[in-house]
Image (cartoon, rainbow, N blue to C red):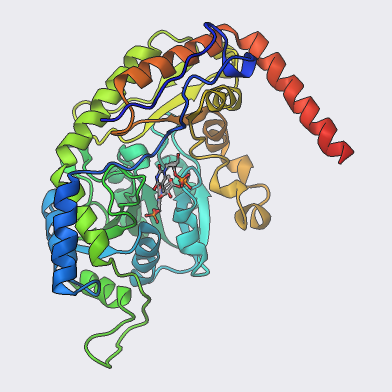
Length: 416
Ligand code: T4K
């Protein structure tokens, strides 16, 4: 583990109040975890010696086999990223019309539908779980609805049984955006085998990365075959295209990184777990701040450390807290602000969607993610906890400074 360097600062002065930023270098939310470099270079040498760089190469095949084994599915189809994997899954399942998704997610979930001219219908989430609320979902179904995409937000399982029951009763397809949930379980079963298929992300910022990457996992053989065709332009052999397709292939360098990450997965989870526990200690007792919990009875990857800020009790809004942290070079992120329904093109298409999404609106205003992963040390976390505590303790002064700064900004932009 490397330590983000701390610099000397005036005691008790937050940077927004005129002090020196605590961290000399930015502390990021999603610094990539890098496993054993020597092994990675060995794999690169092997790849270059073989002169086979992409198109279903041996590393991709090995990566697919190991992912499927890990989550207990029959098939894994590796892709260049999770967004393309979602698009292929949606198309492969022949979804059309409307598909119900949460708005409280990364925008890729909605874009994967919109790019295929399928309307994402945004359903509100359960404030306790941050995942789709099945009771509200049932009311969003129309004659045009063909499917549901559940998201296992932060790696905590969506309500799979309830969604499965609704999907079965109403004749809808059910798939899951499991971008956050590799290595997590639900009721003791690994996420990956719920719904018709699930999609993982192995983006650089995910705890297990292949630089860029994603995969669809499923137990449905014919569907897996279709996904394979679709990720390779629909080719079923030289010169023989039998399906519409795209270029969704994972390259060998990405698969080499993915395999390397898999070799270190237990270490990554252990570090994330230790960091999460360190945050729990560092934030303990801070009035108005809630650390989003993980069920200890399940397997978790602990890759997101998420807090909810109750402005009335903490004294600062989430945005004000984020401004304080950014001043200290702690680049906390407002995942997922402002909610897909407030992003284009959705906000133009459905300008009043927020009326049906009260919990999404509240969470989008109250939640932020804090830095974790192998580049963040327990000492860093202790310091970040202390900064948050001090921000809350000097809330009135911090707010006054931030409001003045905002007024100054407004005035100078009006002048220019
Ligand atoms: N579904 C869900 C629910 C998702 O969350 C995502 C992606 C997807 C689908 C689609 O998966 P992919 O198609 O990406 O496989 C990031 C990631 O780009 C995105 O993969 C992720 N979710 C989302 C939650 O976060 P940004 O734009 O917020 O990330 P960015 O570039 O600001 O990076 C985050 C932090 O990591 C920064 O603090 C900087 C640091 N960083 C980033 C990169 C790329 C590094 O230190 N090194 C790096 O190489 O979207």
